[in-house]
Length: 393
Image 1 (cartoon, rainbow, N blue to C red):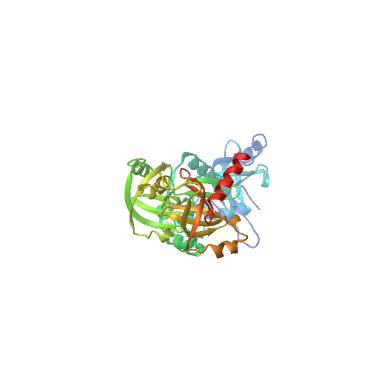
Image 2 (cartoon, helix red, strand yellow):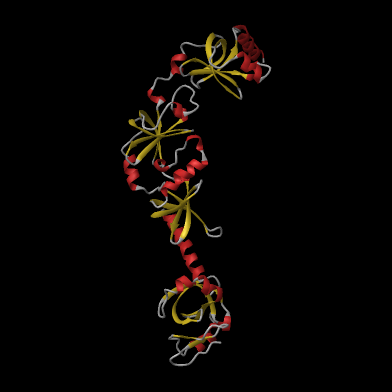
C-alpha cells in the first residue's frame, strides 16, 4: 500500500509481515500531474536518462526524470542495485536505464544496474577506439592468461598479449607450469589497453602490448636494421630465444635464425643467462627480430663452389622426418634423401642409421634456396638419366 500526502509528503510501504516504514521524501505535489503528463511524453525503452532522487524507502526508489515525469526502481531491480542504493540520498542525481514506460501505477520503471553496465560498456568501446591505457590490478590467473578488474568488471588478458618480458617461458609448453608462472602476477599492477569488447557475451579483452607505449617507442627508436647488439638470453622456447637488449626491450631470435644448421630445440644451444650477439633483421610494431646466424658466414655460398649436380659425396645422417632422412655434408649444409628411395620407412632406417656416414649422389643442388636432394649410393648415371628424361619430356 502506498499513501502519498500532499505538501510535505510521506510514503508508507507495507510488505508481508514487515513493519511499516516511514520514509523521508520531498516528492512535490506535482507528482500526480506528472503521472498524467507521462502518457503524452515518454522515453524510449532502453534509453539512459538522468534524474533526481525524490523518495526512498520500502525497497522502492522514486526518481524525478523531467520532462518524462517520475520513475521508480523496485522489486528485482531494487535488489540487484541495493549496494548502490545504500549510498544514495534524496537529492542525489542518478543515471538509470528505462526498462518499462508504463509500469507499476503508470510510473516509468528504471534499472540502475543495467544503466551502469551500459555506461561501462560504452566507456570500454571509447577506450578501445582511443587506445587508452590503464594501470589495472591482476585478480587471478588461469592456464590461458590473467583476470583483471576494470570498473568493477572482470576482463581477460590472454598470455599471448603479455609483453615479451612477461611471457611465461616454460620448457615443453606444460600448461600447468604456465599457469604457475602466470599466478605470480596476482596482486601486481599492469599497464594495459582494451582490444576487444562483447557486451552480449560479457567479454572484455586486454593487451599489455600497448601500441601507444611512448617509452617503448623511444627505446626502439634508438636501433636500426642491420645493427649488431649484444644481450642476455632471458628465455628459450620451442620457437626460438628471447634476448634482453636493454632494460625495457627484448628481441626474438626465431628458431630459423639461430644457426645455419638444423636446430630442433633452441634449449640445446642456449641457456638463460647466456651472453650473445645478434643482428637486427626486422623492426615492426615496436618488436625487434634478431638473427644470430646472420653474423656467421653463409655456408651455402661457399658450398656453391664445391658441389654440383651428379657429384658423389659423403654425408652423415642427422635426422628422420616424414619425407625421408636429412644428411649433412658439412656444417650448415644438408640435403634430403627421399623416402621413395626405399620400400618402407623401416628399410630407410635400417639402411641409413642416425650418426653414420654413407655415400650419396647429389640430385638437386640450389644454393640460393638452400635446397639439396640426394640419391643413396654412388649413382651419377642415375642423375644423367633423370636429366635426359626431362629433356625428352
